[in-house]
Image (cartoon, rainbow, N blue to C red; front, side, top):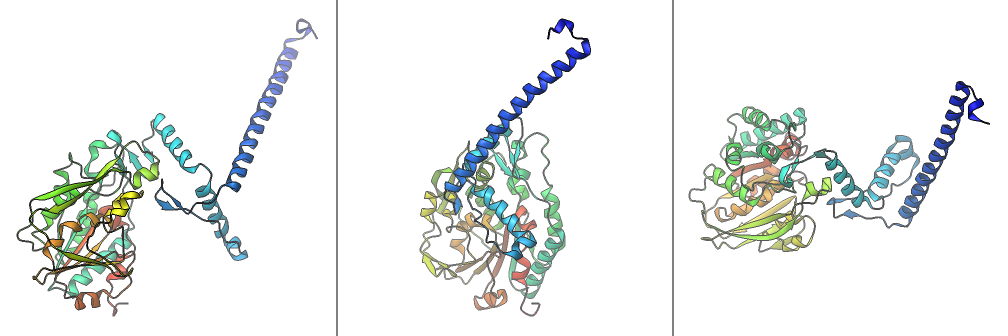
Length: 401
């Protein structure tokens, strides 16, 4: 039909009809491509062998859920299957890296609870704490200190990188006021123990490499500054001032790199050896039944999480026995931040017992009595302490239990 013989309304309807036909063809092609991709991805996932562990994300991956009518009815089966499909999806690591690259292109500076800051600094975003749990932990600490008033009990919380090194944060990035958290802890504990505030120590060195760019931990340098601040309170009168510093790796990419898929930077891990001290000691990994002549695990330098060079990671209980004649015996309650700090304590105690409350289930009162503990140290980073759910149960006396 000649367009010239059509009325304006008929021409309009004809154009709309042609547009719908063209759009329908485009949608059909897109649907075919999309379904083809789904089929290919499904086939690839069926052929792809499940992984137990992700080196990139530094964590165990979800495995295929076990089916049961009970799990299906409760919704647990579907939740577990969703986690399994997400974790085992073929090319997952590449998709994570691609998402991070796209996020950066569009100006996004936060990924999976991590800020992507300037100069390749990755910073864990401090979480809002469960104050009921915090109060329970603080009450348990006060209870322990009250039961052992003759023991020198010290506590310190380490502010996180996002709070101390704000110069690297994305513009206008909100960060929880950790000074308020620290003040709350100090005021709640009162004079039940000696609290040492490390905020000023960290802030005065904030232009130095206090925190890894790719990991949530502080560096050995920051731990040294903290030791110098804490040593007097711990009764260490003449601390070592000269160390030989050994960089054990320049290729560390830590937990924050794993979380975000952002791998532009690499960190250096250093260990500090006192120049004036040649202490011999034995490290006993109690639960594992393993002993070592060093706190350093060189095999960790061949794996993803190279921070595990300190003690090979976290353990429920570690005993360090030295040849020191002085009968100073230290008990440490800690998170993984303390792992690199402990290297500075060895020359000053006959025995150091290290407890990670997340994995410890024995009687603390018997531990203190049997090992003639003279000093107790609580050392955590603020974010971990404010989110801890294990400490109160570990510190409770058997009478309270």
